[in-house]
Image (cartoon, rainbow, N blue to C red; front, side):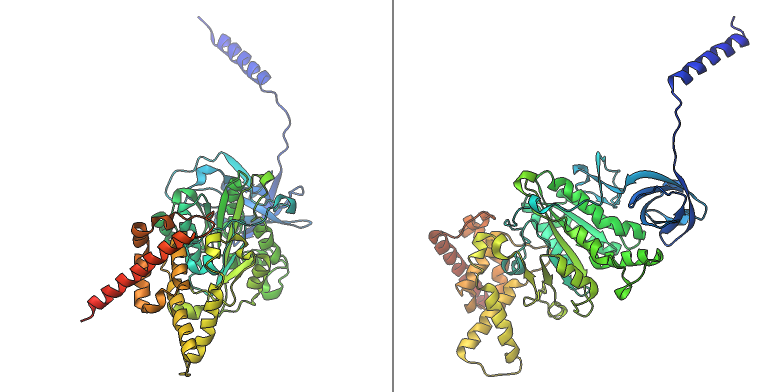
Length: 512
């Protein structure tokens, strides 16, 4: 029988064999120490080789990003619960830059900027990561913006067209429908091949849930990614949310797909960055914002582009949202964003409270890409649309004071009222291109001028069902449709006149 000595000998031989199999080599581990921490930031010493934007690992698995490199201390923005970090905590350097998860596994999910689920589902099976900070495509890698990105809102698609690869700012006072326009644009992609990414920055949980529920109910949520840095999240997560969302979107763009990304909103993003900068004791400038506040948004929005065929031809369309105070678009952050983007959709609080939704200020709103990206069939009908509406708005001002008007002016005003009625749209009800073409033709042919405003609203409500029965070819229009043929135009005019007559008969029948 084996003795205890034999067992010890066998154990020693086994241990020697295992030690020989595992080569022992020296390992370098970079360690630092927290000097002070609080309010979502930490000051660290002892890591002289740290790079800018490097991820640092603190105790309890909390990550941070090095954003300030001084001679003795490192300013670190925390991406987790700051209460677990205290003076004297050990810090490990990782040597890698901040990154975000990417891939098709994220479609349909609600996640935070680090890829952690917020929708009560299992963690996504992440297969790839990408840096949250990436250089914008070079000029030679870009192509002209020529293909439209339809929002389903007639006021925008007809007068302020947005192209795939464009950066169009949505700006207005608090609670004037900025997010609603962006959500409607996402919902309208249910009938296109565009992938959507919604980045919520500093928003209340109720507002974020409302936007997500609207997309789930009316849109195509399986082709959307919701990246949430909510108001109750740590400042670090709110700060990196738009950059992480942009990296997630670029994964699809680099594979030749079209992507729409919404940043809701960059005013709160600027405020979070100001908070971080002041805590890190960076010099305050105008309105206490740091000197690089323009750069944090320009390096983000410049990543939106239409890529050349050599880069597979994908596009990233950005809809950043910004908030104004009392309609003042000359504020620091709004003027910065206006100068970065390719146009702006400005919302008027007065129009919003008058129930003109979307409350677009046509005189100030502009798309610098212009008609080059507008659907050809819509462009042919909308040539004088904006001018007619602007003329009506100018003339209407005089009639409010009881000014006498001649017959010609009265007709212009009556026609303008029908335009304004057509431009009203309820939320989560985007119009197809065919419906927009039909409405534009009805206005151009003055078919609606013989109807009351109530009848115009009823015509619009019944339009889709009527067209599907009397002129279904119109509902098949897409971005490539060149224009109305003479035959189809005549058929559509007949169908629209018949609809107007039917609505007028119903109105007469209802009268006592």
